[in-house]
Length: 361
Image (cartoon, rainbow, N blue to C red; front, side, top):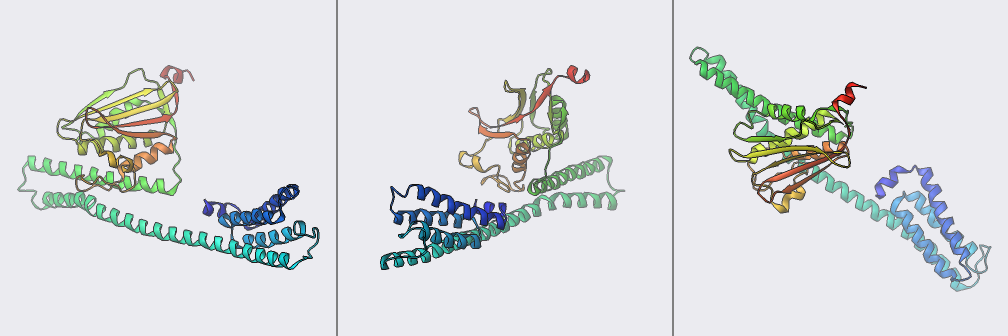
């Protein structure tokens, strides 16, 4: 928070706010001076200097410390309304206050700077760790389909006279599958880059939910060959105004993720409704192994992979899903089903309209 405030306000604004806070606290203390001792006012001013030091740069902090000492001397230390100080006790008290205010402000600022540097170091270490994780994942996830494509292509070129038509079809199929896998991984990296850049702006338009879901299932035809996908969406569901591309990518990642971790003949259910609050709700649930309860809170983290999951995978799919959902001001919830398996529920506020209404516009 201090880092945010430091860069939210310019240096000039920090000076103005620092001076204003000291004068504000002094004014309140002056109004209460018949009821509180002038020594108590010193504590109020010191606390104010400390608070300023927690959020602002060193120059405004030192100015606040100096100003607080002068204000305390002029308005509160007897005799009041003069910078002259009577009595050795008051001279020592003022001198100590002046030193403590300056040291307190400077130390608080230094502590904050040390914490900021420590956080930067930790962020750098975490970034390096994430990059290492990514590179290790990519070395498998990208190299495998590339090797498949190169191997199949070489075979088609070198042994074309020895290959049967069945062999050619099989090799071409392998190239197609590897290309789709490669495209999916590169797409995930590009999507994560869009999210990290902070410039992702959804482009909304009227979407037919049934058309979108069936389109996604068709794209994942090879991955879902041994799975049963039940689409339970009413034909009368209204059109929703959302980003078709983002929602498509969300469903692609969720269905692909379910297909990977389910056994043969697994069942995936896709349902979608419009809630009473006029929110678009879509759920993807399966009868697979589900998620360990102690890892559910981490599955949407970038590069996170389940401890006992299969080898491979970059751990980007679900983090992209969460990022895309939140970019549309939505929310995603993951829970294990009592019957076994997992359920992802997405809720997105959206405009709705029926086709007949769109046609009449």
